[in-house]
Image 1 (cartoon, rainbow, N blue to C red):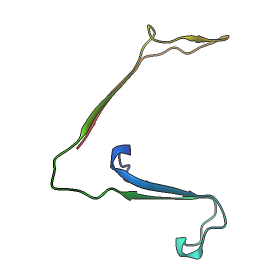
Image 2 (cartoon, rainbow, N blue to C red):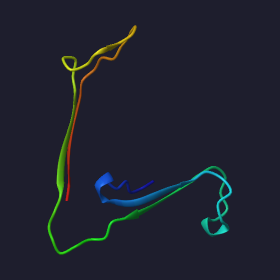
Image 3 (cartoon, helix red, strand yellow):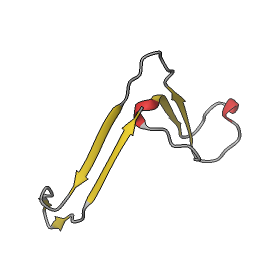
Image 4 (cartoon, rainbow, N blue to C red):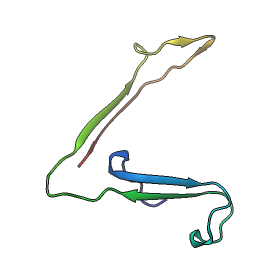
Length: 76
């Protein structure tokens, strides 16, 4: 996929696994269709942050997940 829209801009998505109508073309495997929300005259957006570090991680049984990952983003 050459363009990956943010989750905030998606209005609807559909996953077609098998036996889908011929208007989606001839393809093996699955097909994913997405539609984008339409705009408005108001300016709006959102911001988010994902932070994973060793101080916030917990041990799950014998498996311990380690590593640091911090990601921030905005959607306008």
